Length: 230
Image 1 (tube, rainbow, N blue to C red):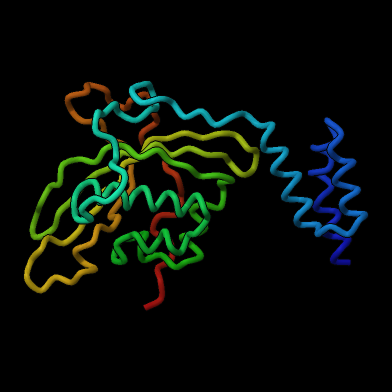
Image 2: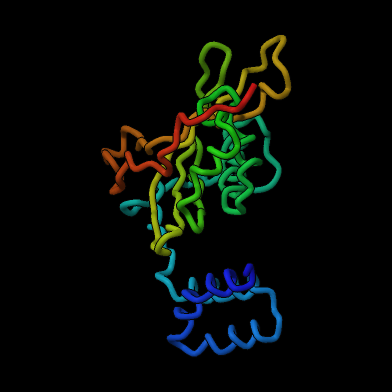
């Protein structure tokens, strides 16, 4: 019965493949005992290749990141600098791309609403996406307040909706915080952690209210869901 269910699951994918004859190789593979999940993944990958390509808007165009002559630095940089904060953001979206949701959540401030969500609800935020990618913009200058330092980093998030393979594009703004080098602070507190991710806010001097993007469009609807057990 289990094998019959697996084969039935493959039927829609085989029908997709039928348009160009790829169903023959998929059926042959099944008949020759190839793992059904492997066949399903191969057919899905081929089908995805035929979808609308992902073409995020270029910097300086509507929906694109602001043009900045100093993009995020590569290589060794001071971890407590603004560029260090941008590298945390780069790492966060890289983990989401790899579907390593637990590791991604570890980059949030554990006392924040999202950082305190239980693992299942955090992962559920991304369940509707087949792919998630991001381009990271240049960080703001650090801004200190009450023993803490804050940096904002613009991010162009793009990928595919799982249900239909359609591309999506949106601009977001990540705010990171770390405790300043004050007596009694721990090494963990002095690291950058994600505090919030919200709508992108262009710098005042651009005169561009929304940079051609629906700024309020959220990546997920599950903010504020169940918190981690103490």
